[in-house]
Image 1: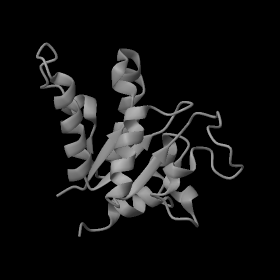
Image 2 (image 1 turned 30 degrees about the horizontal axis):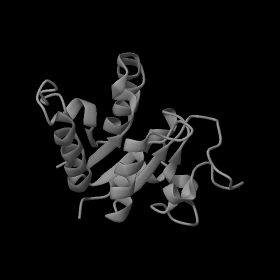
Image 3 (image 1 turned 30 degrees about the vertical axis):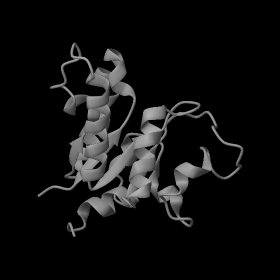
Image 4 (image 1 turned 135 degrees about the vertical axis):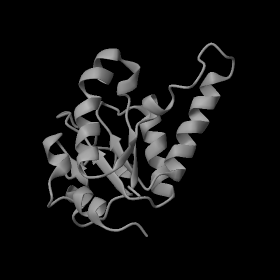
Length: 156
């Protein structure tokens, strides 16, 4: 059975981002043999005309984060998307393997070492955190980075 990875991202809100930015990221994760849980794709059965749809979507996303094996969070923007930050916080609190993706060159931190809010790095090791941080789509499948190593390990 393939490991599952929750792809926390804000790209589903835009048709252009959903069609242009998500596919290469999903493909790279799948190339590692992972089953990708992308929240916008998994929320397709939600009836947005029904009252309470927003609560239903939030609960489904929360449940998916809890049930997934790891999280891959797209943390572009200054600041990054609020929903992605909450999903990432849940995953960190549950001590899930955490991988960050940021191909946005803008700094979002006061720290000279960390490019984002320091709390986003609490799910990564202190030494070698860069191994869990991805700056390009091509880097996602790099065999010398943590995601490829984690994906190739047997499930526990």
